[in-house]
Picture 1: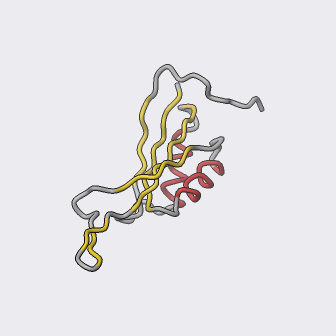
Picture 2: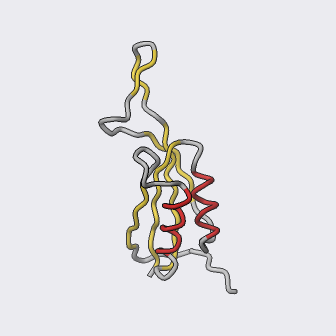
Length: 103
């Protein structure tokens, strides 16, 4: 089974997520620009609301490799600290077109 590993971090940290995932056996990922909208996300500057920019990193990985990839991302980006980001996994179905190199 292929699983989607999704990581949300502050803008500028997505490459660190990709590097950590590749170190753990991933073959890469997709970086998507995003914007936070949580209760603590809005700051003000000159009286105007500013919503911090985020990056969403999506990595598709074989279920057997997922725990190592998630653990490496979690440790490398120190996601135990509030505000550093979150990582979660979703099961996928009907994945097509995923390149899986033979080793």
